[in-house]
Amino acid sequence: MEPLTRRQVLRCSALGLAFAAGGARAAAATGRSLLTVWLEGGPSQLETWDPHEKLSQCGLIPTRIEGVSFSSFYPRVAEAAHRLSVIRSVVSKEGDHERGTATLKTGHRPEAGVDYPSLGSLAAMRLPSPALQIPAHVSLVKSQWPARAGLLGGRYDAFRVADPGGALENLEPRAAGAHEERRLSVTRMLDARFGAAHQSAVTAERDTRDAALKMMSTEQLEAFRLNGEPQKVRDAYGSSAFGRGCLVARRLLEQGVRAVEVTLKGFDSHARNREAHREAGETLDAALGMLLNELFERDLLQRTVVWVVGEFGRTPKVNKADGRDHWPHAFSCLLGGGGIRGGVAFGETDPEGVKQEPKDPISVEDLSATVLAGLGVDVNAELIAPSGRPVTNGNPERRLLL
Image (tube, rainbow, N blue to C red; front, side, top):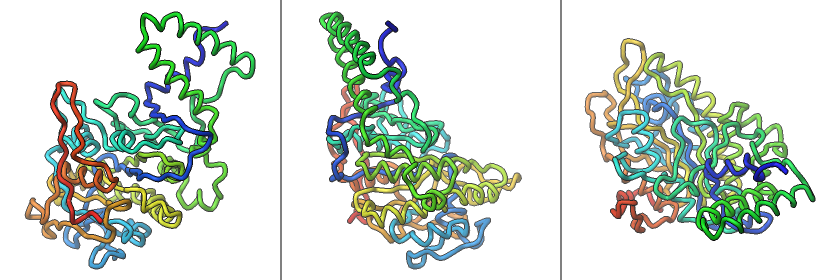
């Protein structure tokens, strides 16, 4: 016999399989979910959701939010903009990519001794989906700093899928029938032998193995595959990894997955800012515009909080390389769905690019608390760090909540 069974499958536990027990198919989801569209590299607010005539390197187009224009790179998102709100006054204290990413994804500035969980991990923990047999927290498309569970433990880490719509690694059994059962019987025998002396470790491994086996046989795995999607729909999302990721995200949300993150790179525009944003915008506009429409048409938007954000914005002034540098002082995001208002324009930045502080600034901490409140998560629920210190969240911005 070969050594312990499915070593490849058990590796999935390190990737953060956040499972819950349940039946063969997911029932209709009753709780809310979080969809994060992560714009890696720090998108310029001036070439996305907050363009100004004197400062932007692109044209402006009207949206379906009164008085609000977007970059001309986003005609499809502009048409669907009224389904979300645009926040133009996010303020962060972190202008470094890694620290800025951690701050936005967790709602806390990084600090020694506390490994803060991402909002997606909190959603997976606070909003259980008992019928789910696939991970409750999923990250689509490779990201340099994917969402992590931190102090919540690996159970709530994101299950990472680098190639959305492609084959999932380590989920096809290497044996079947009697051969498979013999392997499992050996594993159960070893569990019993070592369980008395190492009960917690054996129990954790057994639970992970059982969840992995359940996932390998559930029909819910079809949510990761695109074979059943009409070609017309697939074309509308686009053939890029991000486009396929957005389509897989919609399918996962239909199954009741509690947190999905889709990453689009290409916004680190220290040089050739306009060209970088035009190229990334073509991919983002098609996929995000289609996704917002499908979420609405399939009655998913009312139970899905959607936010579109990166780690910071870009300087109002263009540098010598025709690029923009890091700017955490006032940047933009899109936010809506779930318990969040749609069609609101929140905050303003200086159209001349002189004043640094925006009108109605909202800190990352308060923005993250607003996201959690929109999910129906109690932002005051106690969470204790390993040091024994309670973790506190920001304050939700009530003007953005239903």
